[in-house]
Structure formats: C-alpha cells, structure tokens
Length: 227
Image (cartoon, rainbow, N blue to C red; front, side):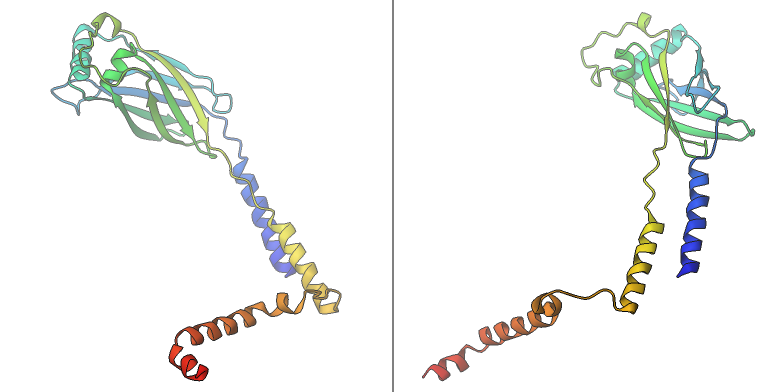
C-alpha cells in the first residue's frame, strides 16, 4: 500500500507539472477566405494575425480591404444563401504549420458589415486546437439590400481562449484514509454498530421477495388450503 501511495504522489506531481507548463510564446496565423461563387474551393489572402504572447492574449491583425470584384462576389454569396469559408494557417514558433477551417453564413457576415470575432482555442501545452469565426449579423438576406460599400474593410476581434483545467481529485488523501481504516479494522478498533437489518438486509430482502413471488404464482394452493 505504501508503494501505491508513493506511485500516486509521483503521478500527481508529473501531471501538475504538465498542466501548469509555461507556454508563453508567439503565434502567427495567415487568414485566407473563399468568396468566389463559381469556385468555392479557391482561397485567397485575407490578412495576418500575430499573437506575441499566449499568456497575455494580445494580438495584432492586418487585413487587406476587399476590391470591387471581391465585394461583388461576397454579395452574391450572401444573396444565394451560401457559406463564407475561412482558413487559418497557424505557424508555431518551432516552424510547424497547421491549417484550420471555419465558416459562417455569407449573409450574416454581409449584414454585419464584415464585423466578426475569431476565437483562437489553445490547449495546456500552447498548441492551437481550433479557430472559430462568430458573426452577429442576420442569417436571412431575403429582400435585404446589401450595399457593396459596406463590404470593403473587415472589423475583426481576436480572442485567445485557453483550455480550462478540470479539478484534480485528491487521490492521495483518499488512499491514506482507506489505509488508516484498514489498519484500524486489523487492530479491532472499528466496530460495526449497525442494527441487525442494516447489517443483513442484502440477505433478508431476497428471501422476502421469493416468498411474495411464490405466493402470487400459486393461487390454487392458497385456495385449496382455504377450503
């Protein structure tokens, strides 16, 4: 049992070290979007996001204004009830790249006048797990007059969302309590002061159930006994 306690303590120390690992580093994210109604798999450059410190969550974003053709394409996407697709290519400080996709209704983005929020989800090791775009515009553009003049410049907020750590169970205290109770039972210090039924209910209840079942399934024997 002592070996089990020692092993548990070591594992808890290791897991605690991993959970609170200092991962303050920078991220660079290239944004690309698909706004061509004729080729929805074609992504073009939208901008760059730089996060100098993951712990602080500060960010810098530079985005290209949409040209006339891009504004017309986005308006067509909105009027035909199609999706606006956004790709985030994350460059970590070790040189590795990972691509994430998110989407929203083109109508929602158009009616919000290109105002959106990008959520950068980060795990406990400092790796990006998801990039999610949220927009608060209207989802139905039926009969809506969309002005291309309002579709030139993106107004984007970047929010870094850290993974919330679940509470760690106090395994060590529980194991120590169980060991103290076991040693007390071996020394005879713990006595069972429960009543007779509380001690043996698991044996009494099945017998009562069998008696009740046998009585209900043999009504002829009861009737003949009554005569």
